Amino acid sequence: MTFEKSGATFAPATTGAEQEEGSTFRPQFDANGLVTAIATDRDTGRPLMVAHMNAEALSATIETGIAHYWSRSRKTLWKKGETSGALQTVHEIWTDCDQDAVWLRVTTPKPEDTCHTGRASCFYRRIDRETGGLVLSDSSNS
Image (tube, rainbow, N blue to C red; front, side, top):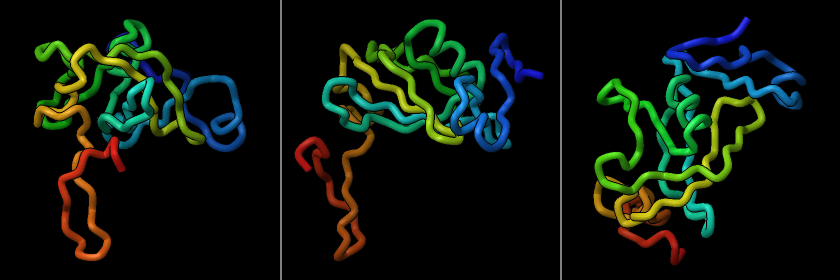
């Protein structure tokens, strides 16, 4: 049995050794049909963003080498950078031990447009452990 949606076909998730040690990609989609996707800069390792992928977005990413995500707010497939020109070229895709998250190592021609706020990363605020408040910070210098 395989999981199919919009042309994407993945082996079904299982438990135990096959899921954690096997050589078959078996993404474990949550109840909403999503896996968490973490994008980092290929060269610096800097975290760029966290988003979600459904089977269609994951399949499109694998097939095209350009990051696609599922927009939970708009309920639609989202080709990252399609309107801004900050397309994310995917160089590697990794999955975690139980295959419920993926890590994309990417490059983009317009890193300053990674975040919709006009920053090179969505991670631009640090939590101050003493006060619990947020501090604007360039995470590449931390």
